[in-house]
Length: 415
Image (tube, rainbow, N blue to C red):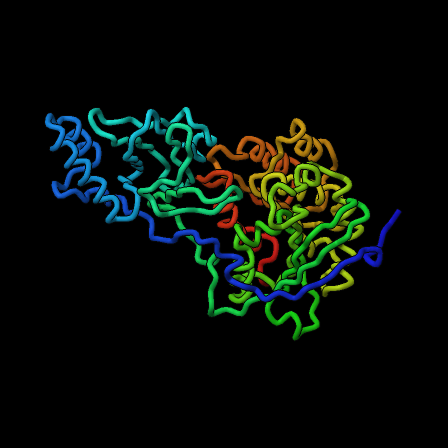
């Protein structure tokens, strides 16, 4: 039975758009140059310097060389990168040191560091695409830590990781909070959902000057909305692109799966986002009618989008496919199309084409690459209007937030 927005108990709280909600203390420094490892007083490269340490016969001389290396790294406040080779070091007593990371699926066994005999210096090198960005930790025996020789960190869903940006990685300024642009505002909405049988939190983004005009706006529904705000810096991207007239003013509806916003363990995404019809009913019969009634949102499917990452990308695609007359625009980042033996890919492949415009991207490092490529092939074969892209990064928020501007340009490019 249809339920209207009037059946929903809710409250709305006005919140300013505050920068601390979107800036998660991610260290920002220029990427290393391709020749910056030539910093030793002798002007030699890392491999030659390590050979010199190994060849030193007296322990004091060997330790002096180790100290010189560590001091040089600490002065630079960055890891050592030689062209496409990144060098990582650890100095300390341990039985085993390894590097769990995006590169190896966060396992401890593939990338073990080597210890130089007669010292407590451990090292490893990796050859990478010069555009790569990845996150990692050091596993010292059974304890995982941030790399003490690398102050650059990135915030993710499980806290901080150490971060490496190869020389050709490009940071996009549009993800940063910029004081010189007008900023939108947030309303906090609590839905007491009869369909889901629980409270469901949402944040509604209104672009700058929303209250001073009567214009109806396109809307974008964002799964994992709280994390797209805090870890994805999406409010910054919206503010900056709208201010520079790169995209149209957009109403953002950020849906958060946590029953307690402060506790990640209360997330219901494994239930809601795994192609749940109940969640789609909640979206279409409770959330959407409320947004249309409370905010100046355009009703046309061609002006209404839904997006998400990982499982959020799966449910966004499912919502658009099942309800193309509501969600005519869709974006999926690193989508979990592998779910249920790739049922989402099979559904699109075996059913008639829907009037959907869809964006899909994936990282190439232990991400959703295989199933995303399959989906792109299906979209092409079925004649969908779509955009597909791959990036040399992993399954994480820094990857996803760097592509939000691409999504907004594809779905809501300013005319």
